[in-house]
Length: 478
Ligand SMILES: *[C@@H]1O[C@H](CO)[C@@H](O)[C@H](O)[C@H]1NC(C)=O
Ligand SMILES: *[C@@H]1O[C@H](CO)[C@@H](O)[C@H](O)[C@H]1NC(C)=O
Ligand SMILES: *[C@@H]1O[C@H](CO)[C@@H](O)[C@H](O)[C@H]1NC(C)=O
Ligand SMILES: *[C@@H]1O[C@H](CO)[C@@H](O)[C@H](O)[C@H]1NC(C)=O
Ligand SMILES: CC(=O)N[C@H]1CO[C@H](CO)[C@@H](O)[C@@H]1O
Image (tube, rainbow, N blue to C red; front, side):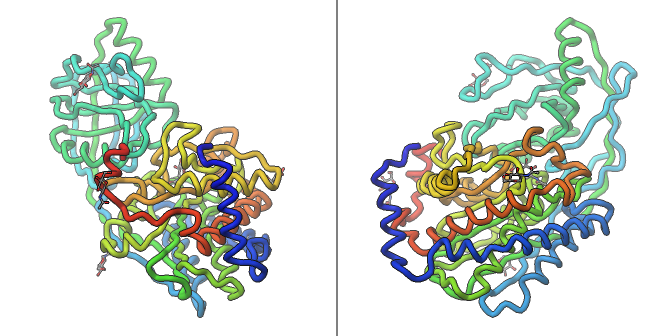
């Protein structure tokens, strides 16, 4: 940790002086209800059961989830709530197939990329492999530039080592390749940073198709055959039709608190395509609802305004809900947001705290992020619980608040992990009620209550209020 001992002492002193005796963080935490968390998870599980087993973006289960959250927020005299509607151009995939030397391979259109791509293709062309360039590190994220990909279908390994907005692998999309097929460890959608998405999207119209993905095993097999000199001919058939997906973020904000100083907390509400999404991410949604309930009791009067957001379109859709929200804020509204806290997959796995200061993974958030990290870490440590720093992969809604194209704020929050050890049911049908550990969620929710308490009462004392300076941010590498 880079935060010094004296900062830590200062932090405690600030909290103590703001609330000498009255309403403490402990009292606020005691308002978090295990039963409320459980009943919200049950409700989301039931919504999935009633809607073909999922709550995915653009599907009836996500609409029902939005309506459920809205119904939970209604009739509060202490909150103002509203929905932020937006429309996304997307496409239905009607046919997607690839055969290589006559053999059929399983292929997917990464969902984020499928949005809006309208095609009717049947192309046959040689397959070429584009290797990771030398030295091939994340600091030098380039593919070999000297491979001739003209008129070819290009196979490449996706290297997922970017820091949002910083080192994203660079693909030379100006080539005359017919299209690109990636492989990585599994079928998860590509973890592309939004910046590379935007720049690539601008150019993708040059190619008959932009990006598809295949399994790692297939990708490795084909790569080694190409390296051995075998000639491979691929046939790609790809047919889509355009659709528009209407979606909404649900927002609730305390009536109390300084309107020029808003603490924003968010969680994406949708599940993956074939999953009830209880850990991912009904758990984050339930955490926010439990905080809402606790504040709604009226005992805690925040100095700063507190705003909750249940985002539509999670990582699979490149954080569409939060990105749309941020893009539609005025400059003043953006400036009024002090910081953003994100909660993702918090009902099992690690007590994972985003690596605000970059001490573990080298990538850091905007100044203030290190203080948020420390607040959470100290909380878990004081409870004798093991803390794990979590890397910023750009794969959740915090990214909309760490991107020069959108907004840059101090960021933090909790994420239990999506690895096999942390959640073997990640984005699968078994991510149902039984996959959640409500005791674990309760601990995380109390940690969130503590951080929210400190930040909403004493923000200025713990994080200096410095107006956003674009030049300085660029110089710092954002
Ligand atoms: C964007 O903001 C404007 C002005 O604040 C508002 O009128 C409009 O409804 C918003 N649009 C969306 C899609 O949220
Ligand atoms: C590819 O091109 C970039 C500039 O566009 C360059 O910085 C990089 O070193 C090149 N990579 C290789 C492997 O030649
Ligand atoms: C549930 O979570 C708590 C807190 O992390 C943990 O102590 C407990 O072992 C977990 N229960 C199960 C069944 O994994
Ligand atoms: C923004 O940061 C740059 C670089 O540190 C500095 O030169 C400039 O004075 C700052 N601008 C403001 C308005 O503070
Ligand atoms: C449905 C969805 O977008 N889930 C994402 C939740 O967050 C984790 C990491 O923060 C992603 O890996 C999931 O894809």
